[in-house]
View (tube, rainbow, N blue to C red):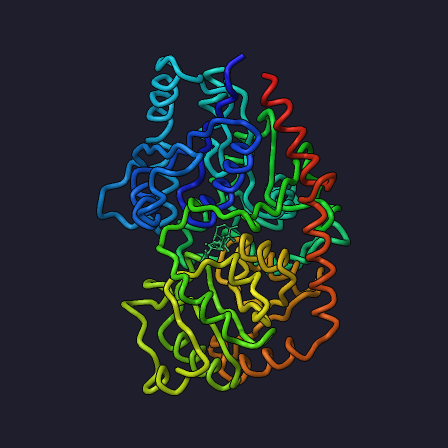
Length: 455
Ligand code: UDX
């Protein structure tokens, strides 16, 4: 039998590429050959962000196919992206698979696709190739999506996912309470976009229903009651590079590693790390208030300000801000986040609660300050602050702004709360255990590998 060869297909967004890339590295370490299929647009960004000396030195073969959008079109327009990707990519994917299989080298033996790319699972089925769907966030959200027909039946949402009135729903007594006005698809201003995202989540969930394997980037111990609600879903996370020196992470921006040297010079447990992932956009007024809040805390901070974090154009700081905080604040455009969170100088993590950031902070035992923006992040916030109790919410005022005083007060509160720190360290131990030898996620991944190697 030839070498097992997996084709990995992420949804074209940063928070989806990174965990699937890490899963690909893990499979490569188990002897798989990996072909990683990005869209042309994302491929170009990943290649540009890769350090020059590591472009041809990794165990994963990177290829790309078109996403169906024009070169100048905005890929942050999720509705358009979903539509173009599902219309365009299946035929390119089929062509790519045929090309690989006819090349005389190792044939594709399995396809691992993000669940948001249900189209790839359909292509795999059509071609008779074993498939796995990869769910990049928590199992509770997936259970909610499975239950969409019941929610419609019960009148909680209508057939387009719209909510008639605010209600609190809970799928089981140990899972987070969800506000129906904050369901993942409700976090967009445009009602058409809400409906597109809603229908895509449900359609993709249906498309992968009878995939051979369903994997997710979570671990059993943090949400045990979500798994009986998700038949056959296998948690294999947290998928983190850990101490492995990966060159290829799948970053869309070049990492600024100078912040690690800066962290080396700070006292233990003294720095607030502030980062809102790859997609969050703050209004200019909110951005200013956050800057003034960080200043008001009087603490050291490391702040990731992506070139597109502030709505409009490049971020402008309050007058004199950078000079006033120069001796205790460091700002970078993209950080090596996992290394930052593992650094002993980090005291807490102010985050948008993206699932990867949540898994990363949790695996490093860092207390959280929650500032959710969209999609699953409100649910992730509930896990952090209400279920696991390892962080606090930042609340907005009547004008929808998180004030500088709120930032200061919550920083003081989280840093002064020993119980939060203890619980964070307990969760870190649980996360470490799940991915160590004999741990629940390692066992699930090994079962998957064994079967996929045998096929
Ligand atoms: C999105 C959604 O927000 C998230 O909830 C969903 O589950 C996946 O897609 P994103 O908003 O980018 O992702 O957030 P997150 O899931 O936290 O992923 C961001 C990734 O970028 C993390 O792996 C983080 O380590 C990395 N990152 C972020 C960096 O490497 N450097 C940075 O400076 C900031």
